[in-house]
Amino acid sequence: MNSPQLILIVEDEERLATLVADYLKAAGFAVHLCFEGLGVLDWVRAQAPDLIILDLMLPGKDGLTLCSEIRAESQVPIIMTTARVEEIDRLLGLGLGADDYVCKPYSPRELVARVKAVLRRSSGAAPGAGTTSDPVAADPLTLDPDRLRVRAAGREIELTAVEFALLATLHQAPGRIFSRERLMERIYRDHRVVSDRTIDSHVKKLRRRLQELLPQQELVHSVYGVGYRYEDR
Image (cartoon, rainbow, N blue to C red; front, top):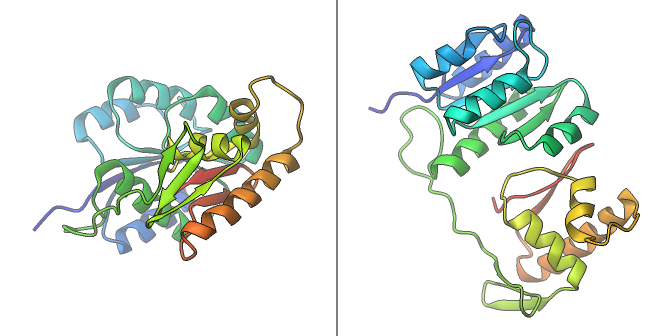
């Protein structure tokens, strides 16, 4: 029987950390808690967890520093948590290499779902104790940048240049959250000034076009207060 996957929670709010740990254990994971930043890197080196839930603000050593230090040595999946929505834009801009970002207050059930999704993307297998199946489905889309066309399920559509650039940006990093500001930088290379609503409008149109290909599947997901990400499950 396979051993349960090990999740490290680094969170100074002990009640929150314990609550999340209970939900993760109920989902079949093994859990270890750290309530401050000092000593975390040594523990990660010694125990090699399968995923880390890392708070931004910590006593001893902050989450930004820890994320950078861990990423310099390991590709272990990291989900960063923060109490402020606006911080996520800054974290995305820093390119720390975290796999997901969650804003407090969050639902422990939602966080468990995020943990499973990140593990699925990183390992190609479903998470949880003794899990041996549930493979990740193949990406349903094929992008043709020369013709601005997208194929799926034996059908093909043509997108506008902006719609294609938006999809290509999201598609190249499945699961990664892109802020509206970052998407504007990628789509409008001339640095023109556009509003958040412009990006939202393009996303709405892109979703409508993708529904023509895969009417039962949502591929571009909203992350409340932050931006968008591509996920094919």
